[in-house]
Length: 156
Image 1 (cartoon, one colour):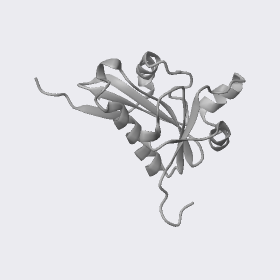
Image 2 (tube, rainbow, N blue to C red):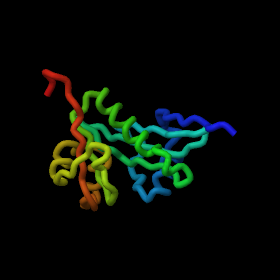
Image 3 (tube, rainbow, N blue to C red):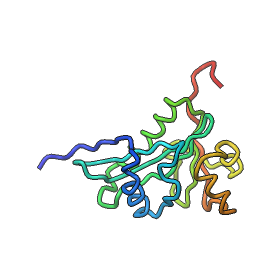
Image 4 (cartoon, rainbow, N blue to C red):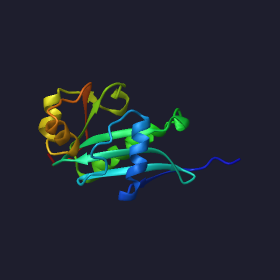
């Protein structure tokens, strides 16, 4: 049997149920998935969805909004591939940083460092996830992370 190739494709509105199912299996929130001002991708193997990731866009920065690979496809480096594809997209978009909220895991290997919650809330205040927390008068639990993106010489 030959190994089926893995593809990452841009999610469409019709993919919302798929993205939500993958996120729910990983214990991630699905509120505001595929909301306006976001970009999501679906990872597929042989046409079958096995992962998903999203970015919520602010002014010059994005918030990583979920990164999940189904248990049957874990341990193959696919989560790393999803995260790094989102990082590259944010760089190409001209973002200076990517932020994320995490209830666990070590994001250092992806180039992220922990930052105070106030930094994230201040830099991406109008992203759907931050607006949802504010609307519920909640604060995200866990840790807040940032990855600075390389900015070309002469850019701020």
